[in-house]
Amino acid sequence: MTDGSEFVFAPLGGLGEIGMNCALYGYGPANARQWLMVDLGVAFAGEDLPGVDLIVPDLGFIEKAKKNLVGIVITHAHEDHIGALAELWPDLGAPVYMTRFAAGLSEARRLGEPDAPKIPLKVVELGDRI
Image (tube, rainbow, N blue to C red):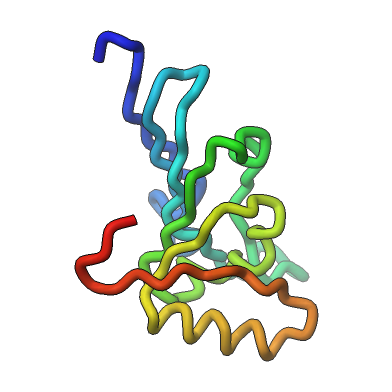
């Protein structure tokens, strides 16, 4: 890669732990890297954190670089992969890609939460390219 482009992996959660799955994959030179987020989940707090129900990934880095966030891919609809989407997506605004099944569950969850944002989900079918 003579132009200084690199492929980088930045786990924001879910690595070495159960829950809060969220990872960034970046490609390009450091000053113009494009990012793809995979999953945006929650972790369930244990007894060691009284009064805390859920833990969400710290998105401080990508919030500052959100103009270079090309999308969010949700792998499946378990809470540890999709549970923070409604809470954190408004700060990112990137396109969200998921299967029809995951989109249906996401929409059903949104309808049960009056203040949840309407996220424009992009359904990905088997064989689609994004």
